[in-house]
Length: 124
Image 1 (tube, one colour):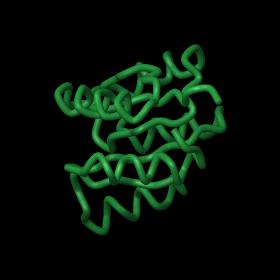
Image 2 (spheres, rainbow, N blue to C red; image 1 turned 180 degrees about the vertical axis):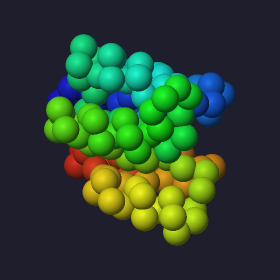
Image 3 (cartoon, helix red, strand yellow; image 1 turned 90 degrees about the vertical axis):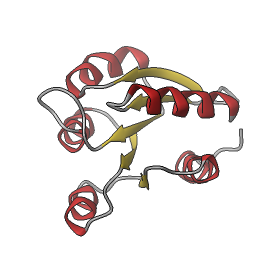
Image 4 (cartoon, rainbow, N blue to C red; image 1 turned 180 degrees about the horizontal axis):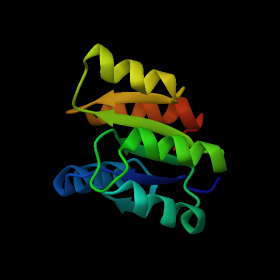
């Protein structure tokens, strides 16, 4: 079975690099890393990730929720949101998009692994 490609969309570079290292150690390929919604919209067609880890807050005009909405209109792609905020407003906004899941930062590598396996339905 081919490795699954996962894109990381995170506005904090250190966090993105930590997630990238974790994904690689779990046996996934990192399709790309981006810190803005606009850049994701450019990269996703060529990279064709199996799943996007999408931070709610991003650099640029589009936040993660707006970017996910645009992606879902054009692609069938799994999206797991990353957020540092666990307030009801944020979680309701995430829920309106019917995501494949969400993780509250900071999260343990084991939580990321369980979420990816559940969403992608694979063993790596």
